Length: 113
Image (spheres, rainbow, N blue to C red):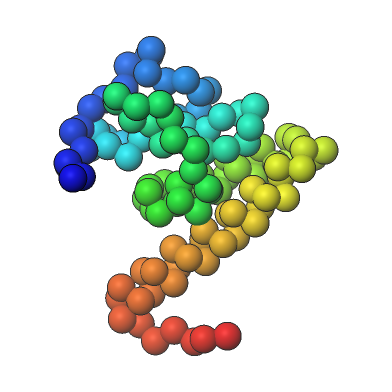
């Protein structure tokens, strides 16, 4: 059985990474692991959960600008890291998925390619 997530505000000891996007509603917190170039969902009573960058965008669509920006800064700062290519693909697929989701939700006509 899935219980509703209990809101919580992470304290300094709950923030394992250098970049965090803290949701003021107390849920859907994100962290970015600079060593791995990966977003993580932060939980109160569980270990951080690795996310595809597209999943991070769906989790926090209001912060898509920060999610994309930080991912691209990481790619530019780590030009030799093969994770960069994957991260770019995740950003592109995630942005497309989010646009398609909201277009469908708004019942806007969407062209199929």
